[in-house]
Each structure stands twice: as C-alpha cells, then as structure tokens.
Amino acid sequence: MDKIFYQNSGAEANEAMIKLARKYSVEKYGPRRYGIVSAKMSFHGRTVGAMSATGQPDNACQQGFGDMTPGFTYATFNDLASFEAAIDDTTCAIMVEPVQGEGGVRPATPEFLRGLRALCDERGLLLLLDGQRRPRDRPDDRRRPGHRVLRPRPCRQGRRGAGR
Ligand SMILES: Cc1ncc(COP(=O)(O)O)c(C=O)c1O
Image (cartoon, rainbow, N blue to C red; front, side, top):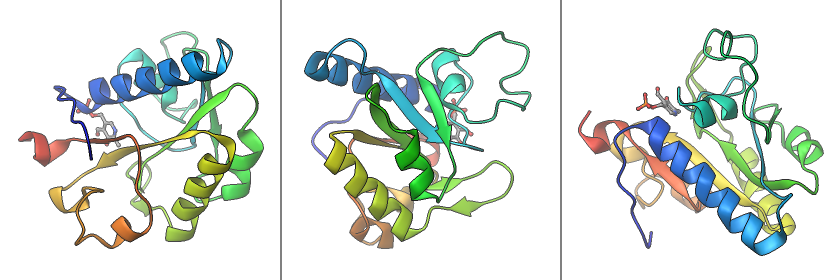
C-alpha cells in the first residue's frame, strides 16, 4: 500500500474513495464515465454518497430522503455475471464489501473476488473494497488468506483499526 488517507468514519472514507474513483476516471476517460456498480444488500454508510452506493432501495437506510445520487447501479453479490451485465460505458468502478454484514454475515467467495479483479483489469475499472472489520482483515496483511486472492486498489479500513 503506497498511500494512506485518514478519515473519521467509514462513511467519510467511502466518500473519499468514491470521489477518487470518479475523479480518476473522468480525467482519464471523459465526463460521462463516473458510474459505480455496487452489490445488492450492501451497506456503505449514511452520508448521501455512501448511502447511494448502498444497494438497499427498500430499506430504511435509503427511504425518506428523496432520490439517491445518480451514478450508482446494483448487482447481485457473489454473482460475477450479474456484475458483468451491470457494466456499461459509463462505469468507472465496482464497489463491494469482502464480507457483507446486512441481512447476515455473507463473505465474498474467492472466485467472485478473483473474477471481479480480472473483470476490472480487462475493462479498465477500479475495484473498490469497503469494510474490513478487524485488523486481521486488512488486505495488505500477508497472514490473511484473502491477501492471495486479490490486491484491491483502493480499499478502506475502519473500525478497530481506527480505534473503535
Ligand atoms: C461495510 C461498512 N461500510 C461503511 C460503514 C459506515 O461506517 P461509519 O458508521 O463509521 O460511518 C459501515 C458501518 O457499519 C460498514 O459496516
């Protein structure tokens, strides 16, 4: 990992990650390419951008606030074909949690993560990982089995790593 950007909360870290991805893509590919595909049943935080990345349109975390911010679409977690189908020429990144925490604990399979990595490399997309919950889940930790699965760029680390 080359750079660390400290933030106060997971939502703010995700806002920064979303903005970095959009900025990079718009500068590199043009003004229309800022879309992010995230997973259904994901949770990315309660700020407006992070809330819009959250794939739960029927849930209280999104209802009652009007329309979500444009530029987010949702695909089925652990289903590579669903993510592939959701990509179009406005897509700049795919954003997922390595372990979903809403509606149960649902880890991403190694095949899914490897598939996303390859898909992103093929299509020139960024892979954004959110939500490593414990220090030992850090993606740069070589003791972690997932380290051999993929090297995310960028990713966000929060929770106990930030003292909570
Ligand atoms: C995966 C994930 N992303 C983002 C957040 C938001 O973090 P925070 O409550 O620190 O803003 C959470 C919080 O539970 C989370 O589990």
